[in-house]
Amino acid sequence: MKKTTFGIVALFVMLFAAIAVSAVEPTNPAEQPSMITIAAAELPGAKLPTDDQMTAISKRIENPVNKISTLPFTYQVFTGNGLNSDGSEGNQLQNQLYLKPVLPFLINKDWMFISRTVIPISISTPNYTNQGVGASSGYTSGIGNITLSGFLTPRDQDSKLLWGIGPVVSTPTATNLSTGNFDWGLGPTVMAVYRSGPWVVGSIINNVWSVGSTNSTENKLDWQFFAHYNLSNGWAISTAPEIFANWTATTSDNRYTLPLGLGVSKTFKIGEQICNAGIQQYYYALHPDNGPQYMTQVSFSLVFPDYSSK
Image: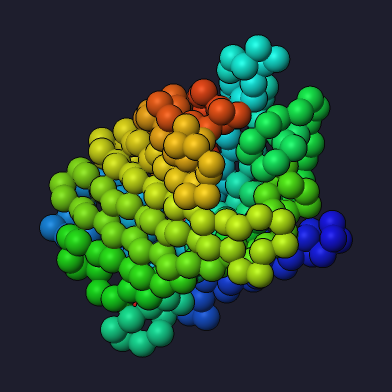
């Protein structure tokens, strides 16, 4: 099982690398527009005198309905997991790394398809006796359920309001029940984004149902709301809480996960490579009995030019 899982992860990474290399090495670079030119041209009402170069690119990175390829690495530290012997909230730690490659595929002059993959890697997570209910002592690590989402969206990026719709698939790649489950999952996903001035606001939402359940029936909602306020020189203030609802939870106290918080990010260049990095802090206003109380998130993204989009 472990060999199969790591093989799948390696396949995704190699696929993204191959597409990224082809994107940054066009056959005739002299005839291709720079990413900065594209960024300024495709933001509604944005011009370089209004948005500096890095801020224009930041707005594109923040927009999930986009033509650029990105490879984000997100590292999360959760604190306050588990329960003490007296039933009070515990203090177990959880360390999680996510790889989230985003790839746009142009279908024709009117439509494009955006692939979003989430590869969760549990560096250290508390052991669970029943997937989120009833923590036991000790920690484990491994791969979680890799999630594949696809969005059909209009290729025209001139509108302030953009949208995408498609399927989401959860794959049975978890190495153990503390990092995920062994079932396939399927459901719909929708995303929308609104851009106005310094603001980029939107949401991505999906619901996954288990298919051919082997250990437990899954019915989970994942709703990520995001709001970015862009400053100058690539700086932005952001919040992007990921809200969960486990519809099969036996009690309402274990059903919802609601984080509240914000952070800052910066778009910059290392040589010719465009990058984005940020840090955010969240407090969980709602969480399951064994869920975390706080989460610190550090992110780093590689951004690749979209020569093929013109």
